[in-house]
Amino acid sequence: MGALPKNKVSRHRRGNRRRHQVLQVPTLVTCPKCNSLMRAHRVCKECGTYRGRQVIRQEQEADS
Image (cartoon, rainbow, N blue to C red; front, side, top):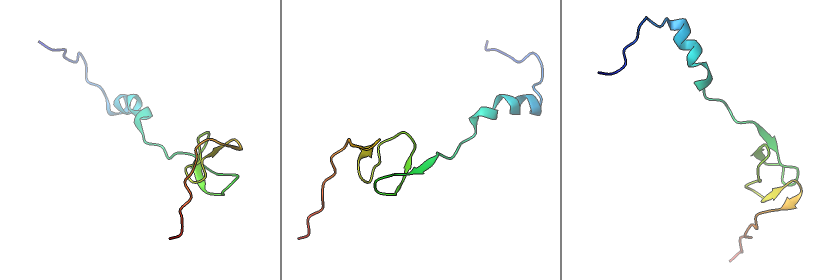
């Protein structure tokens, strides 16, 4: 036999328990090198830099 509730949980108490489950919009900042939007404290996906250093090597598209 499973666990059963002893008392009714009110809508307010249930809502207070679920208060932290809301989705939040990520904070976006502009990259100082390429001025594109990126998430804070992460590598820029456009230019591959983080804190002024090249972290990810980006491939240059060749004109052919």
